[in-house]
Image 1 (cartoon, rainbow, N blue to C red):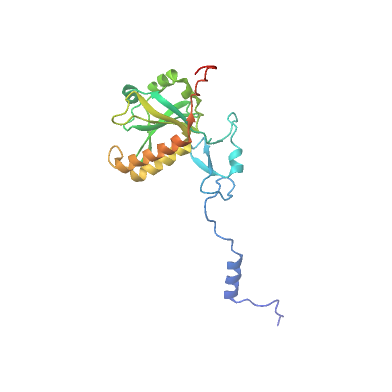
Image 2 (image 1 turned 135 degrees about the horizontal axis):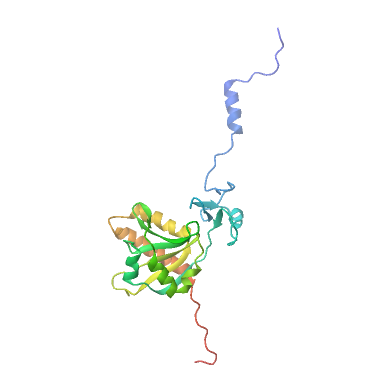
Length: 227
């Protein structure tokens, strides 16, 4: 008879030991690159191939902030600018072929063109027709050309009833802010134009954007000695 080689553990004791050694489950948001924990408020990068947004910790985010670098990912900036009194006529808007009064436009570097999206019950819908009207508008307002490709967008809202029909509300915003708005509206959208709840959410969103924005056009310097 051979001698026992060590103490015999019961199945229950083995299960208890396995459970004690099991790592804690992952909870909360994680960086999509290094899996480090991130807070509810965190940065994003854009995957230029898939067009997808990735949640990032600060360290990973900073790796992709160089505008001129030829990388697969690009960090989404955090700047907000306002373009007050944007001259956007009803005819120009109609050329965009956008059926609702809200859209965001950005430069897609892979396609080498400006694309426009508008919200609806299915999320963000692309206007696939040529944006000749946008080219004309940028020529008239060159400041609009400051938008960084892929990571920033121009969020444009047509005037509402009783407002000046010749101007629109326009802000440069991070691209993730646009998708945040679209996701929110998708849960609220009713009927053709969105309904009352969707419009209230749009109003609240634009209030936050206005609070964070600085003028894209610097104020003219005061003339020395003027009263």
